[in-house]
Image (cartoon, rainbow, N blue to C red; front, side, top):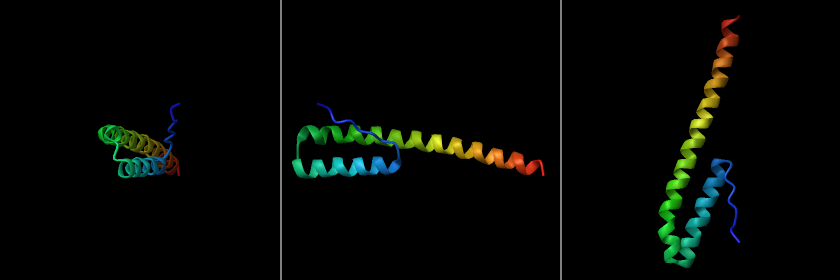
Length: 72
């Protein structure tokens, strides 16, 4: 059975990274160590996508505020 990983926030990513690092440190399993780089790269991409999404949301909210302010 595969464990599902739910990453909804940057905090979830940080916790998962800590878990992976702990697993590597405790087990020394070569397969885990080999996959650590892949996991790191994927998590980095997840964080970047999250940042882009948040930035788009901030821009949208800022535009709404600017438009409301322009009407005054």
